[in-house]
Amino acid sequence: MNRKKVARALVSVYDKTGLVELGKSLEKHGIEILSTGSTAKVLRDAGVKVIAVEDHTGFPEMLGGRVKTLHPRIHGGILADQSNPNHLQELVDADIAPFDLIVINLYPFTQTIASGAEFNECIEQIDIGGPSMLRGAAKNYNSVAVISDPSQYSLLNSALKQGGFTLEERRNLAMNTFRKTAEYDIAIADWLANELNQNDWRAKVWHKISDLRYGENPHQSAAVFTDISSAKGISSAKQHHGKEMSFNNYTDADAALRAAYDHNQPCVAIIKHANPCGIAVASDIKAAYSAANACDPVSAFGGVVAANRTVTVEMASALSEVFTEVVVAPGYEAGAIEILAAKPSIRILELANYKIAKEELRPITGGLLIQDSDLIEASGDDSANWQQVSGGEISAQVKSDLEFAWRSVRSVKSNGILLAKSGASVGVGMGQVNRVDSAKLAVARAGDRANNSVAASDAFFPFADGLQILLDAGINAVVAPGGSVRDAEVIEAAKAANIAMFFTGVRHFSHA
Image (cartoon, rainbow, N blue to C red; front, side, top):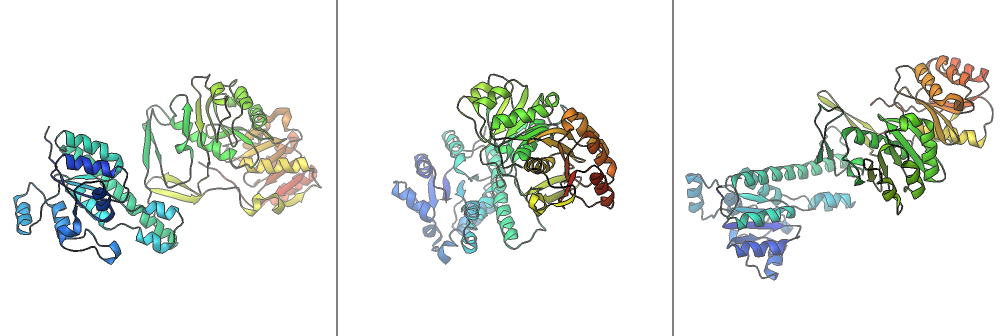
């Protein structure tokens, strides 16, 4: 295997991690080192022999350090194709020596903007010379190896011990470098677009976490990626135990987290096929789990469970009695993981500081739909702003159940109807193409529990027929957005049954 020897290197790094060890390794292998500013100082202070770039170019740094390496004696040495006799002759004529290795990492632009720094400070952290050298070296991978991150130093040391870099190694390093500079440019462009309130251009960088066994079905290949700039979500959860996560596990766990974190009280959501089998709130998380599981224990078998509070030993004990694919929570009490791990297959995930993303991306053929996330924070989501259109005064418990049902129905696939009692769902009708069938499904699942329950509908009742099914089952209050051309007909049905009906003025469709 042919390896290209490294005789001359340029080193200029912002992140000084491993720099001294790197410099000593290069010196040990007889490599001439050129360096800039603080990088050169660190190496010299460690006793490593370094040639300053300004001494090599005969031109000092200028403009407060904005111009250091933008010089033909640097870029000519980086871009020269060492297999091209004409290039080599031009280097000789210009008294320029070629580089075999470039070690560069960039100003911390993303960290700077994340810190909330002022606009001008962020501008100063946009690296110019670094990306130019990285891109030049990556383009010229036939002649130059390019190291763009301290994590690659071990690969560099290994190559030096073997006499240099292979062509394949240089190609891979070039690929990684272009990825890094692309990510850097995207971060800058995205930040400037946000600063200038421009939303007509979008780009994101996704990093693969792992391949998955398959997608929704065994014949579909799949992988999971993460966007490191986005809110902390299911893709960054820590797995403590169990089989590897599947495509469907991720989908359901994401939906379960959204459902659980729609509530401020201790809440557990149990999800199957991205729909809730049960949601409940309670004063403690074990009670919330038991109530959620009681909604539809048949469907909860093999479900995905999310809690918005630490899983206690008591909850773990109850959960361990039911076959569960995944449990995800912000933390686990001492002993809780051990109880759950007695089941070899259950996937135990921990995700602290979960945050719902502010926007959603949905691919369509040849394009992408982007929308604000459907958060429970509109004025109509506050019961103080609801309009009561029928019935008299309601009890505090009924009001609490209506508020719970309204927050919970957001997670139900449209058309969605959710029946609730005592802070827990008792029947859920989801994913039907008309609201009548969703109402029938919710009532059927609730059974006798529908009597004296409350109902929430994710969108208006287009006719009174869907509401009438709920009334016949014995509900005592209902909350819906309102807005149908037949609202008067629907309100009359509620008045005839003498139940309280509230309009929120906000809809919570969920189609995906």
